[in-house]
Image (cartoon, rainbow, N blue to C red; front, side):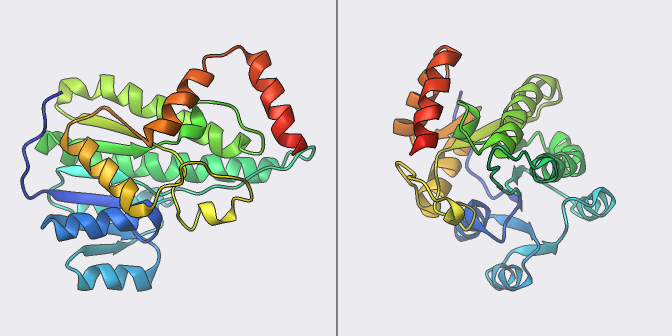
Length: 246
């Protein structure tokens, strides 16, 4: 696709008080864009406000408050939906409450944000960006909840690429590998090709500028996982068994 024209944009970022969302807010502000930073950490929101962002303290799980907050935003060219959480399951106990919490948060925060911002993006012929995960490419033990939520996000964003095209809204799916954030600090396993928030932000911003429908990074992790995901189920069952034993 053709590279999108570089200009000052009105950018909404959810999950802007932590991890990738925070770094994106910082970098877009430094580029001179108008940033609406949405999150729940007041201290970080104050910091972003001092840097020039318009900040909104908001629980994205509250649909009515989300719609009311987005209604007050007059113009949006780019919306990056980055809010989410991760919680692992330890078998043989299947914690349905934890499972549903992860699905509800990751899908709820995204779907509410999309509903709120979409009228603005249709008006501006803008771009909607959702954050998926390379974990959606292959089945990993303990990631039943997180991986399921990210697989759902992949399906949603790719479907929206089709259904929103007639309305002039471009849609990008971001597929990161491991990124050094507060969320990944809980991981007690090796994280190959771990990226810094700065590297993640650079890859996402570059992909958006280039108009990419799918923004994957780092390629040395995402591409092999995509290939491995095409292997027969028996192969992955064998691999998972070995990982669990370790």
